[in-house]
Length: 252
Ligand SMILES: Cc1cc2nc3c(=O)[nH]c(=O)nc-3n(C[C@H](O)[C@H](O)[C@H](O)COP(=O)(O)O)c2cc1C
Figure: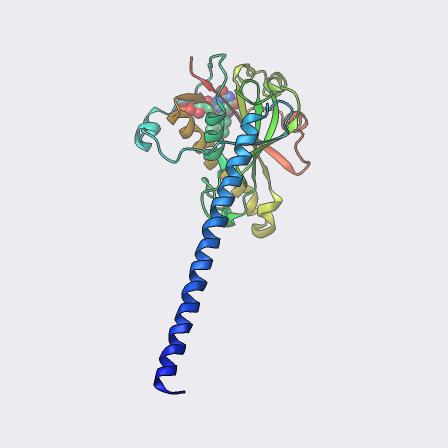
């Protein structure tokens, strides 16, 4: 091959590489916009269809910033037990659940820390009054930021009775319940893992306190209740222990 041919073949090679890159770029752009479209379509479908009767709800995307500083939120956080009889919006519920256990990293890291990133916590939502959601019990699925219905009727009154008749529970439009599956953590850390799971419930509950304060709503952690009763009402698995009830509503 003489010098001229060599230059020519190099030029052809560069052309092939360039065309290849352009094809990859076009394919990437098409694929990306298609998957975004797909997400949007799915969300719009959820918005268009009446949610009553749906067993799975894709929540609106949570906000990642606000006008309230963390210092102001800490200064103002207080337990609130007196709520207006007003519904929460789907957006507010989405924001609170995200604060509790939302996914915030590519590898699955969440808003609250977790020993060994094993995520033993579960969050249930008892809905009495939320715009666009039927009353019932839902489980929060951090993957996909979704709710899945597990009980079809409003159980707020039963929940209040199981919590030594703390009646503000049945007056709140929603209640979050934190529970934990110990084996997810003890399989790595043995007996010490039991304490870790309780500590994690504290982290997640504090996230909810702060998020709720930042939204101008009110909440309180409730630890006084009959574990077995709560498990029955919420249909929890045998190896799942309830830790906290957090009623949330608009402050009176
Ligand atoms: C582990 C724990 C359990 C609690 N259980 C209840 C409860 O069952 N009912 C209730 O009304 N408040 C409960 N609280 C909330 C406390 O009463 C409240 O945090 C305390 O009065 C301090 O008020 P503050 O949260 O406004 O600072 C509990 C708090 C903690 C940390």
